[in-house]
Length: 441
Image (cartoon, rainbow, N blue to C red; front, side, top):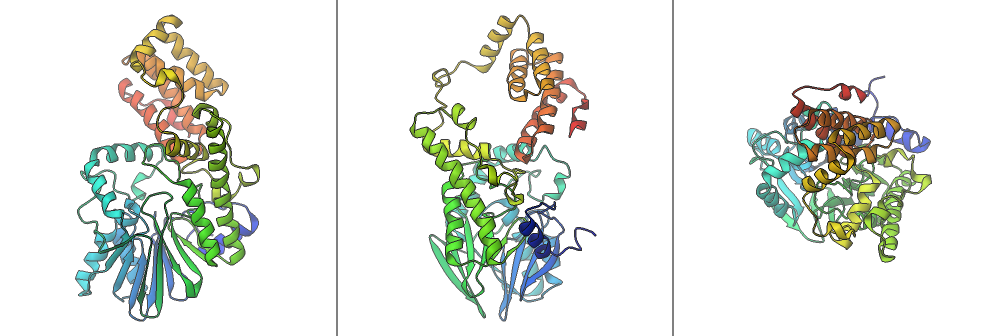
């Protein structure tokens, strides 16, 4: 049976009820499924949810830059009504990037342009993207550099502008909450910080339905992310509790599968909240005891009974990064090591250690031996010292590529895989050749 032939609610119910994963949970079909009366989802890298009213369509999120047209074309096979409102759950490009296709569709059909709604911090995010355009292109390539078929993501990381001009600015913004009505449906938008500072989730009280954006995504919460701005795991957990307190019986996410039925909603949202509450609570406890980040990241873990939940798999972000983000939010950038407050240049330290070891070759060979024995964390430190001490040393770069391909193969999260693959490819560029390491996975 093909992935497309399975209805998303059917898959979700089976996974939640059994506790057994049936990958992929995040399906990128660019095809529409009717999920409830007058409610449909187009499953893209980031989904577009559409509500049909007697006066037009309400949409949550627009899909990514590269797939907006596909999303709109699929939507039009279901309804030719005008899109009256399009809600940005937050300002990430996989959610707003397809907005230009919605504007173009309205113009082509002679419809009134959709009214774009968002939290008040979204325009500031867009401006930040413009100011840090080059930086965002660099980190996006690195973040997604460890996976294949990157063209399917549709998040716009290869063009001259990270935020393209065709992305629609919000027409109306709100701070805490707002409500709007289209025909027979009333939607309340509520703000909560989580993956971003500008995140909104939609609540349709009559249907007991949450449109959750990235608050639920069928992977471990993206509340760490080592290359991006501050995330807010404490507020994220609180948002889960708020959705439960509101009486949610359906949760429709921007990534992953619909969650239908009060018991299933309680299971998934409760698990997300508990995992984040445990990580943040234990991290703050240790900080209050004077522990350093080095001590904390090697101690704090998700509770054992949540380790194997299919909707908490660390396939994108991971718990260790969430711990770091809690420390950053409350503890600043210094790691507690006095030498790191005002450090020497890394190159000087690496050269000194290579001299003490006897040669760069000694460091590189030891790094490979450690990697082969399974101590990949320590291996990475030594191989970085080797290439930093002698940036053109062929043997050191060959060892570095080998170590980082091994590290990538051992990791689960896309973020880790991307960073380690990028490091391996940096050394391959110096060597002028591809190594066999990519075959490790």
